Length: 154
Image (tube, rainbow, N blue to C red):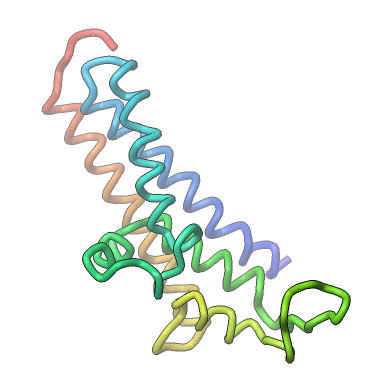
């Protein structure tokens, strides 16, 4: 059950964070058409710089700050930590990928530029706290935007 919670917590925080992000986008939009155009653009931007498409070591230096402020990045890292925890990947001679040894999950995380400098457990909980802070930020932003922007009936 504990293992299930370790997988479920980052996913649940991510869903809640995205929900309140979409509430904020809707609150600043004059109509649903604008909100529906902004939402996917924001999600694409976040997804592109989360470390999935382009690992941290491959992100150009001019854009690395976007990686560090990206809430999707923290969810992605914590989910990678829980999925790969304790696993060792062994080469299979039948596969066409050139490989000479086995690789453990810490080497995979290092290759991806994740969980550097602190323990893996520390990074897991740090990631959860960052996403929880983003949840609070988007809740507050949504309420502020609802008070400040009045576009009539939505």
